[in-house]
Length: 105
Image 1: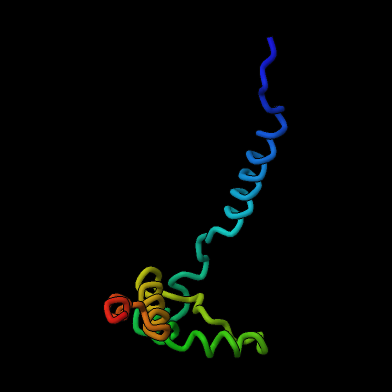
Image 2: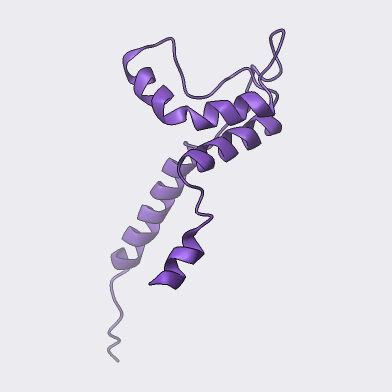
């Protein structure tokens, strides 16, 4: 009786590749912020909104200066994150008119 089954190594390589990819991506996961709510006045929603809006300019400056970063580490948490994301999406268009552009075509 002859069975034409592929060798076992053909299955091991893709599984090993997936395991390595998952481990590599899990190393990029965000961790807790030890500086959260520290300092006399941590950044909140409005400062997060502003930082999100100016993030493209801040990113370019941060490439040449070690004193500037695009994200405030001493922030109030989720509200700062929410404001930052709204600011970034407002600067880059946010996709609010995407449906209207598709209807015009």
